[in-house]
Image (cartoon, rainbow, N blue to C red; front, side, top):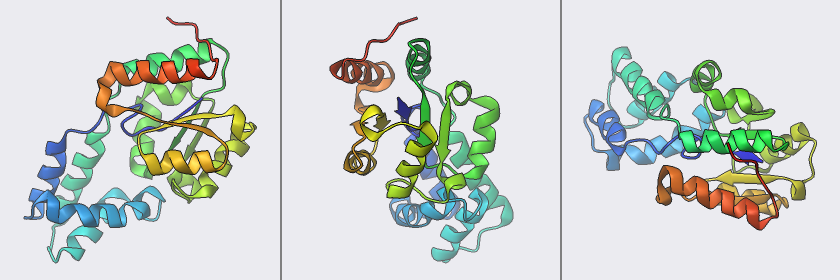
Length: 209
């Protein structure tokens, strides 16, 4: 049983954070967002740090940001992903107690990964963790799923993967993984209950509590 991190193990970030980051560059989030997505693979793939990532964006916008400004942007970004969904952690604990192998597969930069390994309980629960910054390849690229299966020592059909982004789910399905979309719209508790129901549909029985 494998979980994505963003908006699955953690709760969705507050949209106000992205507005705040964009305002530091003197633009709206609508103007900022295309560059945020354009350079994100470099950050998640470990090819730059978070401050360097925001330097790329501000340079592309033609904004001469100070070191303090890009540091502020980086800190806001890091903080946006620290609100953990306690229901997901409980779900993961139930999976472990029920005797299943537990994994995390996530696009994640080195800066956040260092924080997460020290501070987020769910990371200590997982038997196998595959992160894009260390793998050098991002979801939805095939290579990162192949690395996950190699580390798990499981066949694709033996693996269930939850992710909140459809393209990442589709990439897993193409390899034969039982990939399922995590429904963030149901809220912290509802999304976990839906995922539990999805597992039950595969005949998976979990010990709760």
